[in-house]
Amino acid sequence: MELPTWDLSDLYSGVDDPRLEADLRESLRQARDFEQRYRNQIASESLMASRLKEALDEYETLLRHESKPQAFAQLLFSTHTSDDTVKALVQRVRELGSEISTHLIFFDLEIGRISPAKFAELLQDPLLAEYHHYLDHQRKLAAHYLTEPEEKILEETANDRGRAWRRLFTEITSGMKYTLRHGNEVKELNQSQLMALLYEPDRSLRQAAAGALAEGLEKNAHVLNFTHNTLLHEKQVIDKLRRFESPEADRHLDNELSQELVDTMVGVCVQNFDLVADYYRLKGELLGLSDLKHYDRYAPLSKDREELDFEKAREIVLEAFGNFSPRLAELAEPFFSKRWIDAVVKDGKRGGAFCAGVTPDHHPYVLLNYTGKPRDVMTLAHELGHGVHDRLASKQNLLNYHPVLPMAETASTFGELLVFERLQRDLESDEARLAMLCEKLEDTFATVFRQVSMYRFEQRLHQSRREQGELAVETINALWQECMQEMFGQALTLGEDHRWSWLYIPHIVSTPFYVYAYAFGELLVLSLYARYKREGASFVDKYFELLASGGSMPPTRMLEKLDIDISQSSFWQGGCDLIRANVTLARELAERTRARA
Ligand SMILES: [Zn+2]
Image 1 (cartoon, rainbow, N blue to C red):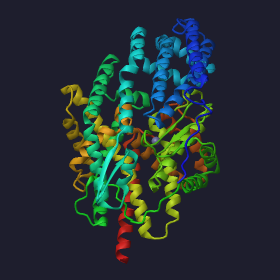
Image 2 (spheres, helix red, strand yellow):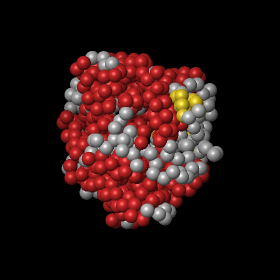
Image 3 (cartoon, rainbow, N blue to C red):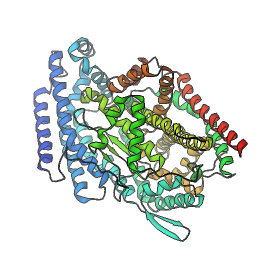
Image 4 (cartoon, helix red, strand yellow):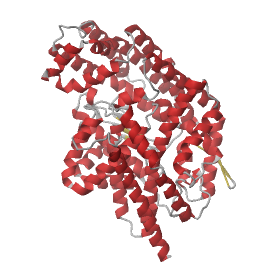
């Protein structure tokens, strides 16, 4: 299977491209110059709206310029995590990035120090309209800033604290080899190859893969647990310095959601855990297993699983997008024709998938580890959804470009639903429809209920570290098992070797409490998709408008425009009801196929 690698040459030609160093130097010069011209000018009663607008425009241009070397280094690293020259480049770019930041810190601090009366006056001026949201949000963040010298120290040491540990985590987990023993075979696999085996029909193979994962993680548990503990404590210290009341408070602030709203959503999901258990009882019956284990979660119902080559995946996704709107397919097409996708599976490449939006004036990139499973087609649709979202939001300036994390999962999840429906349409038998519906349900559970469980795990993990000090790996293992078992009730038992599996999850390390954004996105999109089914073509423009707003307003406001009130538990229950309806449908399909057998 011929798989694409991405072409980064429209950023830089390589690690030794002289423009890379020149751009970094130029960004540093611009930052110094910016500081000279605007220091003590912003937090001033004589500040004019026109002057602030000028500063914001320059600031935005400067950040855009700086983003390109940053993005290039990060993208190259994700496919070459064990290459020393690439690692050195990442570090170089980060260190220079920190130096640049130290010249810019004053700006956000001064925005925070503008007097309330002056700030209100400035916001009245239509000149600043496109920066309203940024300024407003910046004021909220500013309440947690330290003094400028303190902020500078934090920035200049960040590469040797949190960022260093996260980089180490990526390098270790991307380079890890797992020993799979199955029958007479012994194979060395990387994480992507190993995880793909959890979707195999052969139970003994799935069990062997789960065992190999546990063994590999246990072998590296010392350094991975040390990394987690260090980061947990670092967050505790910084949260205290920044006066955040709970471990998750800074994430909610970044996401522009209140604690109360997130608690409401999480609470509704927990109340609906029973539908997961319900589904797995059905799955146990269908597989003829009375003792479902964690490695059976994704067991396929049909044994003959078609491998899909990348070309076929491309066709399916573009067709599904095109059925929604030709514009959606047009926005996704260049990812293939212009090589904005890296899909090969190779050693040293990080696992999983992502889409990286660079700047509004540069296209995004997609990373996948494509193994030809139907699940990979969904992942392709997911990441292209992100890509399309970024392209639509490119009419925003950089400060309004990136959607907050919970909204960032809108187009991705929507893209998956489009592809799911397109794939369902081709199926002729109830058996095949049931098999695919089950895959979709399992995926939805992983996105909604599993992420909510992980969120609750993270809450308790941070709390435990704060109350008990450094945590032994088995203490965290036990906490993980307890939190992750809840959604399955009695219907599925997470076996002993499952207890290590928190150790490889990148979000826990890289972006604490990121995970609830997935549940948020999926439940929101299920509701949006139901709207699309009801309203048809008239929904399409509203949807594009939602995506095009990027990060230019808080999620509550964006969704108000669609008459959606996300503060109500009934909204989230509506999403869970749609999942429940699919569990009921799965049961009906199962009964129909059994009646015929
Ligand atoms: Zn995503």
